[in-house]
Amino acid sequence: MKKVLLSLALVASAQAFAADELHLYNWNNYLSDATAKRFEAYCKCKLVQDYYGDNEEMLAKLAAGAKGYDIVVPTGFAVEALVKQGKAQPLDKKQLTALGNIDPGYMNGFFDKGNVYSVPYSFTTTLLGYNETQLKKAGVLDKANSWALIFDPAVLGKIKGKVTVLDSQRELMSAALMYLGKPANTTNPADWNAARDVILKAKPYWAAFNNQSYIKELTVGNIYVAFGYSNDMFQAQQDAKKAKRPFTLNFSLQKEGNTLSLDNFVVLKDAPRKDLAYKFINFMLDGKNAADLTNEMGSGNPNKAAKPFVKPEIAKVAAIFPGASDVGRLQQLRDLTAKDRRELNKVWSQVKLK
Image (tube, one colour):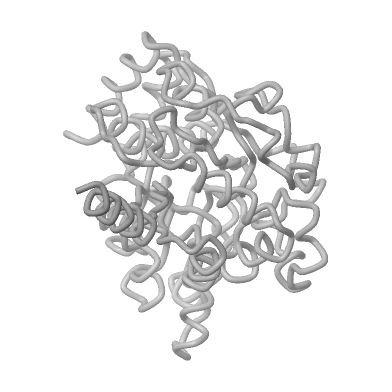
């Protein structure tokens, strides 16, 4: 009987090893298939990804009790929220052998002093991607460097039905606030109401709120302007080039300012496989692996060891790696108090329901 039990235990152990899985809850378009496959070969495990298109979506899912994820990739203010909710696991930095590869300028952020819970992974800017060819035909290409392209009815009238915007409370409200010359992080109700009014005046000219398919819609020419993330716009641009589309796609920062999102690896407190989580973070801290994030996905990179491997033509794109003249106009979103969140939710409900 003991031999039978031992045999069964060995079989169970082998099955468990064969089924080793790391569950990553990640942004869309934030890890290439090639990099994922290399990690699986490295760790001799399976990488299972689930995706979200907005920090609020991820936070709401975890708050509702979603289990089984090992790592999430929240933007700074969402790191704050996860810590407050008791969802984040303090990091064992002895296991993070390549943490020194991160540029110190991206460490010790306002959202996690001392990086107790988070490891910087990537950064993006939230901006406008656009069909240069069609905007030139419509006579509004000169507005591509301004939020007027998605908020000014006089401009929108020339491209009606060809614009999509993120279905993201914080990002869309922030863009409207910056268009009005207000700080992206204001909590002044009057500012929020003014931003709401700007959005409501522009809304009839938009095709849709879209977090999921705007890359494809822009790539095939169904829309002319998309409000979204810089890495997504890079992907659309590359896809259009490969498909030899009869138009040119581009993306740029806006003169009124943009939000910058520093996204981070956070291990969840109830992560089933913390061991694999550390393996994954260390793998992505390697300079060559980190460079793939930029070269293949078009994301900005806080990893100084990746710089020698980043393609020069990407390194010079200001929307991916903002220059000194752009940095002053970039703002990182901060977490809101429970009271402010409730008030903003009310304003957002008015935006979506009207």
